[in-house]
Length: 127
Image (cartoon, rainbow, N blue to C red; front, side):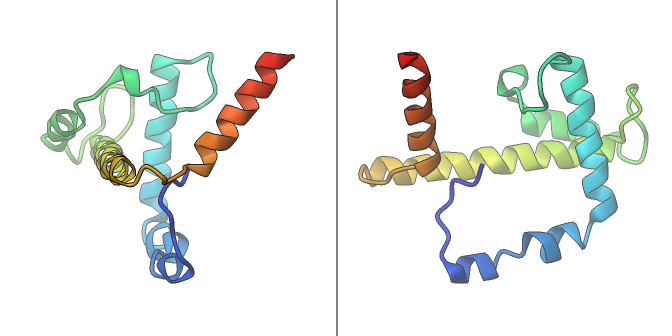
């Protein structure tokens, strides 16, 4: 869920498809396999989602996998894919932390996705 406010100029300067996915299609597939395998390990009966309660040591885990880069882990997933996954997890948390600092400093900032979620939850609870 995108939580960063972006102008048209920002979107043009953030080419997710042509600037990331097209550069690294095979790597992104490997990282997605890593996500799937982790889901099967931690929450096999739930839809694919990042269960943040399972790990919070992204940089330590990243370093452990980095030491074995170029090989496969015991689950068949490349250690390098796990390095990438952990790096993305860490970056996501950094961005969210910085965004939270921004929101705290700007109390009038409204997250539209959170607002919609709250409205939906309120509606469901009334039934």
